[in-house]
Image (cartoon, rainbow, N blue to C red; front, side, top):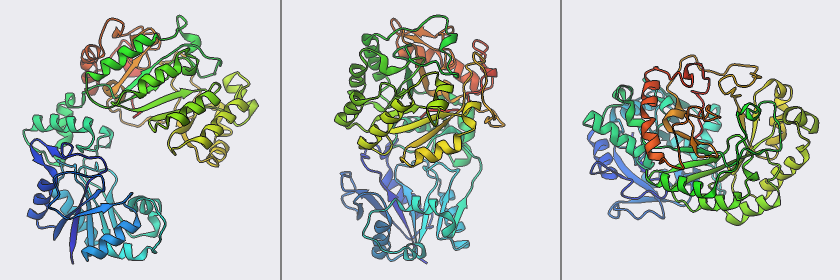
Length: 493
């Protein structure tokens, strides 16, 4: 039986991405794999754009995705029984886990073996020749092989590998291709003094949660407090005062402040109002688009003003970072009015479908519906209706904002065990007047950590570190009352 390992280099990775603490990972991982004598040979795969230091090695070039045709060609050229796919930017790769996964795969004669609970930087995927031979040849481009198998898991002999401890709640991939994760890996390495085994990682993080605290990765900005609707689940009517428009100069300062961290992040235009009602909305959008560190630009909108001007902007900019989330909680005019207190269903429906039709990207548009009593009666039909338009749906948990508004939810989605708050670790919420909110629950800014008209994001974020560390140890803040909050398990990006 012949087994090859394929060190898989993702598109756009540089040699800097593939270097960790002075070690060049393509060579380092190859040596580790061969020294364990668990595979017969190591090969590399990259896209045609790769220009790193592997010029002396045989590289299997992927034209696009690693679809079925790629794997058929690979098995034909290598003449092997099994291929172990390993991401090449995985400095913490645990060879004992790889060996165990291979033993499990061969023992149970699996066609495909993978792990759902292990981060990608610790695990692998194992593909058998029998699986590839059983899939018909096609000239058409298909989905990546692993996605095809996982979507049709009952049609194949699949072995699902599980390994304790389960650290999925850390939401880390442990790969250096992501600059944020690379810095976390460096922090863990420095704490441990070496590359730790998988079994040690959870304890290292739990003893030293500061390794996770780098910079804001999700910056939610309230451009305005204005809105044409009066939704039954909205907190606007409880605010102490009306929120105005954010000054464009302040937004420019926010972008400058975020450059301090030199790490990628996402921006969301949300808060108490409708962002498209800001007088300089498109100017602000252009400013965000010109920032290379911004990975995603999310516009949460009621969709009323997302007409031809907005549609034309999206089409002309052709920027895949632009994501629009439409909040629509109705199946027709009557059910829409019952929730939103406005007669705009036809307008919003027309705007959504027009933008979808003109969009260049499959993941640029989302429909968001809240899981509340008013939507329960039609939520199944809602899914069926919008799936016809091939638009992704977000089912949103209601947030009562620490009991500011009536709880209209009809089921409790909370996990049994409380985990550290994702929002305190990575979110940064800003009101239109520049107040840096304690968290997204602090809608009046009563517990603001500072104001960006005079303070920097880096100063405020560093000052907030102890709150995150205390929350990690279950020493919850009392101002505001974190212990009574039900948003700790929700996350954005």
